[in-house]
Image (cartoon, rainbow over all chains, first blue to last red; front, side, top):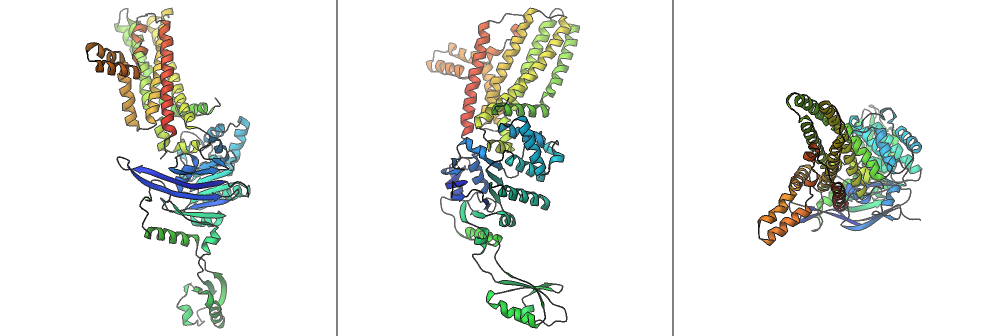
Amino acid sequence: MGTPAIEIEGLTKDYAVGFWRKKMRRSLDHLSLQVNQGEAFGFLGPNGAGKTTTLKLLMGLIFPTSGSARIQGRSIADIGMHRQIGYMPEQPYFYDYLTARELLDYFARVFGFNRAEREARIQKFLDRVGLTASSDVQLRKFSKGMLQRVGIAQAILHDPQVVFLDEPMSGLDPIGRREVRDIILELKNQGKTIFFSTHILSDAEMLCDRVSVLVGGRLQGVGAPRDIVSMDVQGMEILFEAGAAMSLPAEITGKATHTGDRYRIEVPEADLYVALEKLKNSQARILSVAPLRPSLEDYFLKLVARQKAAAPAPETVSTGVAS
Amino acid sequence: MSSIPGIVAVNTFREAVRDRVLYNLIFFALLMIAAAVLVGGISIGIERDVIVNLGLTAISLFGIIMAIFIGVGLVYKEIEKRTLYSLLAKPVQRWQFLVGKFGGLLLTLVVNTLLMTVGLAIALFYVAHKFESSDATILIAIYFVLLELALITALALFFSCFSSPMLSTLYTLGIYVAGVFAPDIRDIGLFTDNPAIKTVAKCIYYVLPNFHNFNIIAAAAHKEAIPHALIWQNTAYAILYSTVALLAASAVFSGRDLK
């Protein structure tokens, strides 16, 4: 395998707090991880976990207390590396006196594109994020969702190899989320590496090759969503239909939830065939049988609960400075 | 302008224009019209002096107010609103951003000053009915105002890299006022035998930007000749001092965490 797209080694960030700024609060604690080329990587964690801090460190907006990171094999301190990356900040806010087209033109100029190239790219990405109709409206009149789309457009305008998105789905309606998901998938299909933070776990499950979970500034786990969620086996779920005239065994009806004549029941894996046999004998119509696996959300909540229960190390205090 | 500071400068200028900063020109125009009408009615023989004095003072004052109040928010506003994040994630160095912001505000001030100069010229022609070759001194006075504004902008930008707009305004204004009286601070040493006070007064004199030398409004009003040496000296001084202030701003800003 070639150079990883992102390599983070022991990245730590402490903030000075208090009036005299003598106390230190640790926002990120020795984070180490690698993201491979072409991977869609989800960076999960609750508010205050250190997700935005990590992204800001990688973008050079803040400086690490210790540790290092490389993107496309180049140090994050190397300004030339920024030609290969795109970044959308959390809740992006842009110069509100500019129109979307002017803003994209401003950023395109930074990359040195000539006029024809700028116009072509701007039109392409305005179309891509569905803002062509509003492209000449000042950004102060844009909704949060529209700003989010502008944020994505400016992040991918220069065709970067690695795209960083900080909470790209936040503030979007279901249609907007779907569109952003499609853009992420399209970028992934183009072979780009996508690193995005989120706490919308279903999006991470759907889009990511791998996810990491950060809680209290510490990395709790990295892996494919499927690997992470399959760590615990939960049993089987049976959906079936049963008419009012049918007599279901009490041990079934006792556990089942139902809406009308549609029932749902969870049974241990070992009891599956016994339950199916009973349902068959009752002439219930089996609709589906599916393994019950914990969602990424269950895993995530478990980690957060575990972290809260554990006392923090003396030098490490989770912070609310940045999420 | 295709360099990054140039791109940032043009955007800063556009922001100022769209934020209606140049609306101050309306007040200036009204002031000039009122002054020309009033002076024509009550002054005998000194109409020109009054208009030049008033016009140059207003140009200087309007410029200083703009330089300080916009200058102190140049960086602070970008950090507060997080508009800077997307830009700095691109191949843009922090010093390039600062130089661009400085250039953008300076461009705004130059355009504003030039438009006010046109207003002053119209008012002057209205009361004097002609232009004289000695009026060139007025242009030198305006050039000095621009040098002064460049220096104030650089100072405001420096303070805005690490403090709030309110504190930055106080610092910049304080240094400006002290700088206007720089020769008086130096002269404190003449009235004491204490060598420590003499040294301190001298040090303050040399460290403070000397704004006193930029003010030739009275000389322009009285058609006094301005030595060429002063023009070169003020130009070099403003460039040097502004460069030092920008270097200091870059040093502070380059190591700063953006919240």
